[in-house]
Length: 325
Image 1 (cartoon, rainbow, N blue to C red):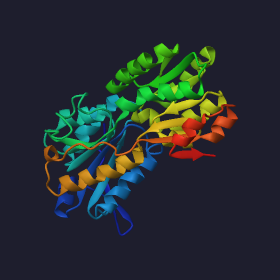
Image 2: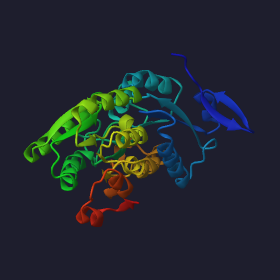
Image 3: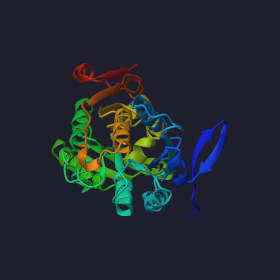
C-alpha cells in the first residue's frame, strides 16, 4: 500500500510533511482510524474537531489529522495502523474494537484514544475503566446495557410483533454478544430473531432484499461504527420497505428510523478530544480513567410513526428526550 503523508495547509498551499519535520514545528500528527467513509463519518469528525478547538487545539497549527477509512472492511486496520506509526503519529484515535486492536498490536508506546467503543474491558482493550493501564484510554459506550432494552421498547409499540430482523457486524466481537442478548430478551416475548450481516452498503442492500421474503415486523440495528455510519441509507430503505427501525443512534432516528435509545456518538467524539489534549500535554494514557457517557437519550420520530401507521404509546412519548415531528 502506498504510504500517504500527513497534510497541512500553509498560505493556502497543501504541503505533505513527514512527521519528523513537523515535530520541529510543534504540530502534532493525530491519526484517525475510521470504520466507515469520509462522507458517512463527517458529522462525527466535525464533533471531534469541535472538541479539539474547545481544548485549545487549532488544526494546522497545533495538530494535523491523518484520516484512514476502512469503508466497512476492518481487515484494513492493521496496515493503516502501521502507516500511522511509521509516519510518527503522536496519538491515534480509534473508532471501533478492530481498529483499537490493530493499533495496540502495532505500538505499545503511542497513545491510543477510543472515540466511542463498546465494552473495552470485556473486549480486553483496557484492564479496567478506572485504571486502564497500557497506552489506551478514552470513551466507552453503554451499549451492552441499552441494546437489550431496544427489544423492550419495540415490544411496547408493536406488542403483536413475532419476528424482527437484526443488522450486525461479525467483524465486531461485541456484536456477537449483543446479538445473543437480543435473542435472550426476545424469546420470552415470542419474537423470532433473524440476523443479517450489514457492515457495508452492498451488504445493507442485500440484507433488505433478503428481508423482503421474511417480512419482519421491525429492524433492530446492533451498534457497530460502520453500520451506524450508514444509518441514513438504512433509514431510507426501511421506510421504502415500511419497516420500523430501532437503534442506539439518534442520528439514525432523525434520518427516518422510528426510535433510538442510547448515547450521543457526537458527544463522545467531542469528549474524546479531551484525552487527545491530555496525552499531547504528556499525561500517560494509563493515568486517564476511561469515561462513559453521562446520559442516555431516547429519540422518537413521529413523522415515521405516522408514515408506518404506528400509534406511539404515550408512555414512550413522555419518556423521550427528543420527538421529531
